[in-house]
Image 1 (cartoon, rainbow, N blue to C red):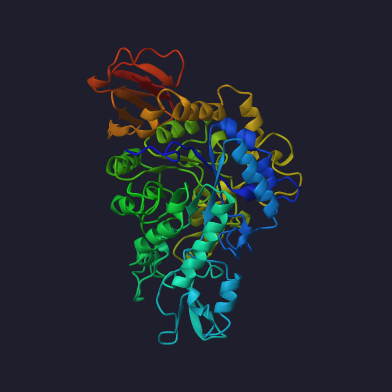
Image 2: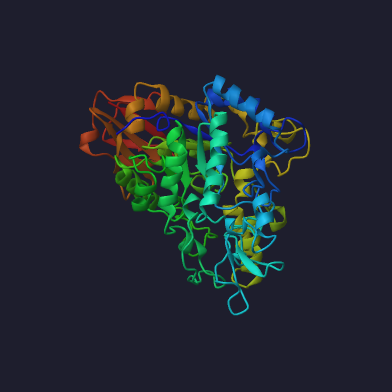
Length: 556
């Protein structure tokens, strides 16, 4: 397997709006990020992925971009960005930007021209269709509720928006549009950024013929099934690679909803013609279903292990995995897979980040930050969950109580509450009024307290990441093959990593109850070295007794 710097990296996603506010306006900013670079370096990460910082009217918190070459004034200036890039590089930290080119804002200059008239040169930068029998061209639903088509009175056509109506989809079938995107990408890479996370990149190629989709929620057709694998998606990404990416030493990860292992092998093939890796969603959909994200069933551990093992096994030697449970679109894993305790946060980290692939941490995960205790739909700002609540409750498909329970569990706002730095006002995030409420548990869950506690989640993450990146076991833990053990055990996540003549055993109790583990005889190595977990443990034996949420790792 070819070894590369980005396979050996640890990525930390920063949601700038919620990370650190330097000027007291209640919104995190670039200078706030600069002030925390030493903290991030000490954590053990070496790539910082910035959620969108571009000019935006913020209908979807920056994922609706009105100028791809300008910094949102809420976050600072281009001079602030240049300073961040310089200082990050000086400290050995790389910067990865968010590339959002399935859609733009409806306030982008391209769209303003496109909707000005049917014969405007940029009309074909977006996807316009005539009415069909006096209504929308298809039954497609938006991911944020309602129809995926918006009527434009002036030009007498509908435009497609797979997300908010303020996020019209770009028409990638237009080569002029593609060249505009590639030129914009070069602008940032020439500045010195180190890679791109690509938002919903597998949606960029739309069908050649638009037809109705199966209805999944009783209201609208499932647009995702139509647009996830358009006829030219690989052609366009290969072109992007030839025209832009192959000319830079950069890392890339594509967000690819609905992708399975076979498609992943194409998007992230080791031949290097498309992307370095992808974000897939199978594992984070196990507590939902294909028809409804808004469920609240517990995550089944054997099913989770089977799914993660499948991706490890099938991508080994042919593509590369990304390792994540948390990001700006997912609820907090310690509340989803754990029981909100520090111990469960540690267990989840050990189980996930010792597999093969590039780890992606999300801000606050290393502190064990939890879901927010929402009490009312009025407390949310997330456009997705608000729209889903109104649509499903309004149509009588869900009760208000049931739907509130679901959005409290799954809302993206859970990940977006401000970073908890200390016990001071607003958790040290801002001197002003925070744009989103601070989780009240910041008095105990915060960076300063965990810096001083040798048994904290933060200290565990530091040890785990040092082990993965800078120890004698690095090649084993980064590149080693994966083999799942105890497949049906309802409590324990246990696996082997093997690289050459070296092997590591990872055993994690993913429950709040003690667990007895009977290991295969092949793991009984007397000279095994414990490299992570409770100190003072006996030598590795085939019969293990794991305490609640205990994680142990041996290597030989």
